[in-house]
Length: 259
Length: 330
Image (tube, rainbow over all chains, first blue to last red; front, top):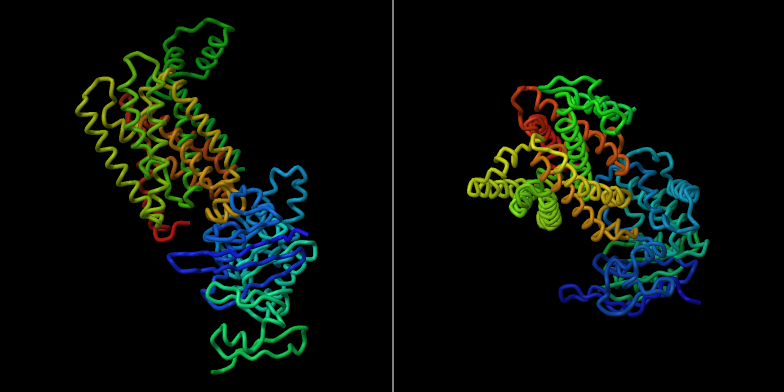
């Protein structure tokens, strides 16, 4: 079966530095993959290359069997959505209008209709708990609310591959859980999610697989239980870290400890 | 409600534009000219009717066209640059078009159809409008971007002044025309020469309204949603330049319509560019026709250049805008 995302030894050199170094990643339908690692490890650059937002210096990326390099922007937007780290600034549109913009790639699809657009937007607003903000102008929202609106726009886009750079950073603990469950839900319909997350415990609970990066390289890939070991994490983050069994959930619980 | 008010204001302005002026004209004259021109009667020939047909109607149509073009061009620039201060006059597009218009006048034989005048303005306007993207990228800060535009506009105006004084030709309008504009010289021929450029440019801008909405998210986000940002922005800027350039060929440099009208109407009809463009076209036309009525009635029988009317309101408005939004335009 063709993987939804197939990155083959992608590298990125910026100003002489190897920001991403020969990372390979195959993501199948139904997968939720978390990319983790310390600051500057190359996670965001990897995600941008997967999205076709940045051309790799070496290697190749295909989404749904088609190379992202040279693909038309519209075809790409139908196959993958991408949440960037940059917050939107001073957007004068309402929350609903902004989320509706996620439907733009579908505007010429014969199968699409205004009813389908409205249904997708309604579902996305509900899944991210921003339906009650529908009529508010985006520029008046808090950072966390704005991030949930951005996520709603990504969900409304209904692309089979969702690439998300720190989707939970500005969110409170309840909304972090809500958003991760919404992403998990999206994968059950045959889609796939690749997200950069800093909260290792969220990754441990929700991800099928994690890619642990350091200095541009993927140092470990596998299930959270396999990758999140005390020795590996302490070495990669250069900080003592304990890993125990989560007392209430299936998976490891990562705890930083004093040096 | 807003649409009703806009439509009424345009009807009132156009009616005033047709009926008010040095020669007294009544609605009956308007009706008689109409019947005459559609061939139902041939009773034309009174002074009022000839003033109406030869002067007032082309003048009001020109003001309608110029007002609509400048206001929509302003709305489009503000959308492209996400900057409420982006205006064809402040960014120097009008002044650049002025130089193109002079070239067009120089290349057009006396008495020939003035299409080269409109073309000169359109080409220079489009060329400069495309250049503003580089200026925007180089300046980054929205207020600095506009400041560079103002400085370039002043330099271009100075060069226009040099040409006007050096050439000293009776075919060249006086310097006032390049600073404050005027509808005095509008004829059916100049109107017909400019109209296709403006209409094609407006249609081009209108075609991209939805894409322009998405640019509010940022160029990068718009690209990720499947929009060919570079191509669309290039086409919109070229269309802005063509529209503004053709209006400069028709009525000279008129400021602030592109700044004031979209800003006010965005608060009325919302930020969606489809509605904003339509409202700006109607509102810009109404304001321009109204300003022209004031220009020729305030000091009658003398005429005040119409740009003096728009600048007398637009200048203080810009000050207010800068005081309120100067640090972080929204």
